[in-house]
Structure formats: C-alpha cells, structure tokens
Amino acid sequence: FSEVEVAIKNPAALLKCVGCGKVQSSQELKPKRCANCHASMYCSRDCQANDWNQGGHKRRCKKITRARDKLQMYANELLHYTEDWSGTGENYFETEMGNFWGLTGTRDYCRQRARLIDALMIEAQANMHISQPFVNRVALEMALEHSLDLLTVSIRDNQ
Image (cartoon, rainbow, N blue to C red; front, side, top):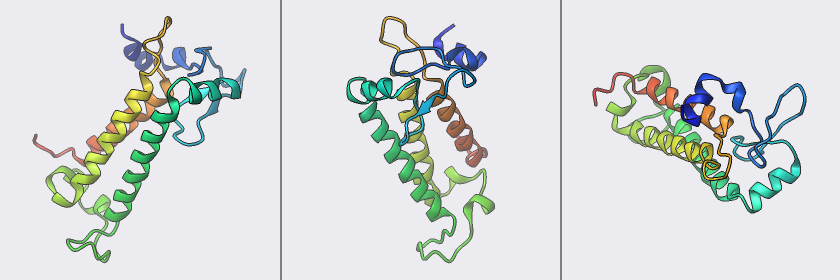
C-alpha cells in the first residue's frame, strides 16, 4: 500500500510530527498545529521552527492560507448572490446545492476549493522524499473533507 492508502485505512498509524516524523499520541503529548494553515502538526516548537525555516512549510502554508481565505471570500459572496452582485439575492448554499458547477456565478467558488485541495495535498505529501517518508495525516484529512464538500455542492454535475 502507498502511504496515502495506509493513512486512509488506519489514520491513527500516521499521526506524526511533520518536523521529525515522531509518532504522536494526543494522550501522551499535546501536538501543536500550525497556527496559520492548521494543516501541519508538530511535537515541539523546535520542529515547527525547523519545518518553517528549512522544511518548506512557510511557502506551502502561505499557499494554503491564501487559498482558504479566497475560498471564504467566494463563499461569503454566494451567501447573498445576485447576477449583479448587489448582495440582495438568495443563499446559493441553500437554493442551489448540488448544482454549483452548472451555474456560472458559482464556478469560481468550485475552482478555488479545488485549488485549496491541491495545496493541502502538496502539504500532505511534502515529506515523501526523505529517507523514511510519511504522509501528513492532518493535511490529508483536510483535503479529503474539502473534496467531499466540493462533491456535495456539485453532485448533479454531469461532466
């Protein structure tokens, strides 16, 4: 099995510090998540600082955070969508659930959610090149959750 398949079948087996790969237990240690993207977990401040400065998390974190913030902006617009964006319309999350890709006004939201999923998957697989590769389970779970949400809003898409 690949690391991704193992993480999906047995998520507890891959709850590891992104900085050092040390297996974490929420009962033994108090794992720390990145305060910006929330997609990486660390066993200590040293591991977090090392991953930020030398592990490339700084760049990936900014990409995830920008994608998430832009997605939130699109979501807020869709809460009161009208063709002219006057903000006096209906909540598309209530009235058009399942049809998002079929509507021109909601496609940017769908595309942005896909960008966030891509950024999270890059973070999930960032440690696959080291001598003992592993998947970032936290980022993988976040990507899966966003993927399911994207399917929910576009379930009636026939493409």
